[in-house]
Image (cartoon, rainbow, N blue to C red; front, side):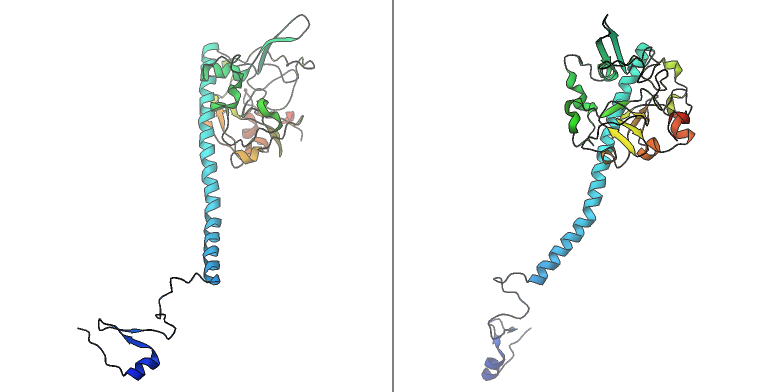
Length: 299
């Protein structure tokens, strides 16, 4: 049991001790504050505030990169689901027609003007969403057709397309297409202001290795470090430029691209492996006969 310690009054006044009614002795300074206890009216000191700010800054520096990577992986996964759905629509089209959609299918009138032109995306959308693409042409900018990694559509605006078709394979040729979008190349019978003639379509039986033939993916085209996006092309070539949209290809998915293959499986190869790698294995997966055609690219 505690008991009061007798202290001389003069000594008590001199050193500032005060006896409480409970019998406990507490230390009290002459300015009225109890030692070890902050006056609630006082704020934090400048040093204390700077220490708190420094700790917050360190935590932010550690968390922001991790949060950025996590959000990037989430967008990559969302995009993978999109291209998987597009792959299913493509497979259904092939199952019904025994051939792949033409990159553009057009008829020409007596004046050689294209009529009733239909692009590959409309053929796939008919099996994905079942929408009437003629009455709802805006399908390209929504749903599974819009990559979550695209921040801005840039100068293409409504003409922007997130995903591209491996229509031409490696390189540019007038008389030969190595991809899925038709037997003839991008410049075959091209007239000013008119689409090229790429008919006839590629038969399903012409695909030498469906599990290693890229079909649809993030719409990126070019070669080496000169790559562009925003058009309906998944194409490796070095023959002409493209549009630089506000979201660079490397910014979409941490320098990767999502691609669905002819057999329906999805991969996320790096852009470096798609557009810079010159090994047979990297080049052959662009072409339906599974050959590299290295000569189609500039040395």
